[in-house]
Image 1 (cartoon, rainbow, N blue to C red):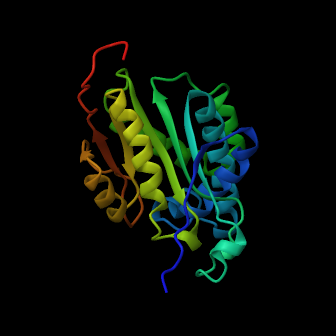
Image 2: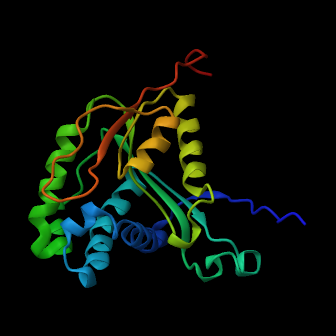
Length: 225
């Protein structure tokens, strides 16, 4: 018997979505090598990351795009490898329109969020700034993409990425992002991204970040269409 396919709807985040979106990103990113270096104490890591990501998700709502796929109703996902236990968003993607204004009072907010680990976040952001190409040329920056751990390998990340890239292609907009590991890099290569700068050089053992750029699709219609 065929298994019914769940249809996933992508929606735009509203203000009330900011905390759960930041929480999902924090939980998804907490195990990676970079996050273990940013916040070494395991019992503090998710909360620090969530507070940090909240600043950026809030800003992206006004100066970019925050896409959400909600989790399927329990009746539709029960027994599916823990998917019935998913609360909050199933998958999210956070994009910034570049150029965009700075976050108001960012350094103060960053220090409050990151506490004793602020210098590590600042060091990361310095490398992010150096690697980011064409910062004065209009494009979209894919800051964060996360899928709930119980919902991996279901194509949710690709679904979010494909829709946003299709929208960009309508306007010939390029895109930039940093792949968090070799597996993500392979996905982005398939989606038309290419390596555009050396991998990040930070003092931890493990996978680096891979800066990647995707040229905008050539427009096939004239202005005003």
